[in-house]
Length: 203
Image (cartoon, rainbow, N blue to C red; front, side, top):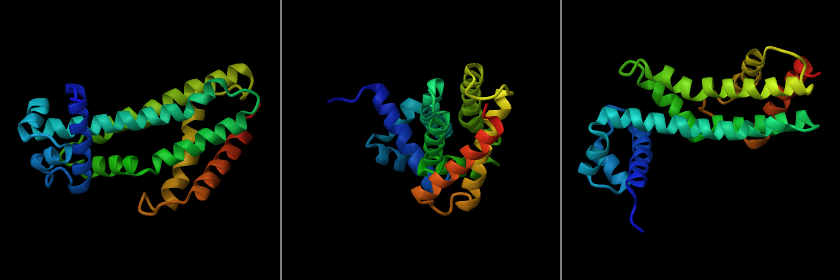
């Protein structure tokens, strides 16, 4: 089956992120990206114009993909039912797996590594991922507070604190991503975070 233009563009973006994560912006070549995407080099330029536009596009596409995964992870909180703790624990475990995953780690590392050349990039990535997630989580917590499943609270602050309870231990124990955490340890972080959160915000 022939790839559509959109499919080809996505394949190039995926390949570009892989190559940029492997070598960094300066050392990555458009030819290697084309080879990774199984596309001709002129095709890459036809889609993106130049290497910088390709880099920005690859970073944005990956950030949006990670963000979509995190939003999917918290979707059950829209209707948590009677067992809010269990729903929170499941969401927390899924978020930790996404945030500790290779793609998320590569995205953060690449954004910070290229900070001097692209000073606005880290902020843009943060807005597309963590800020977007915090806003969505605040919406879920506001709904839970209205239903009585959580006590009345500032949902934005509650969302920030919930994520801090997850990400702080994750970054510390993983040595900022240098050490892969086993599933049992991720689940332990999730359990502790939810326990602390429910003690603070439970009805």
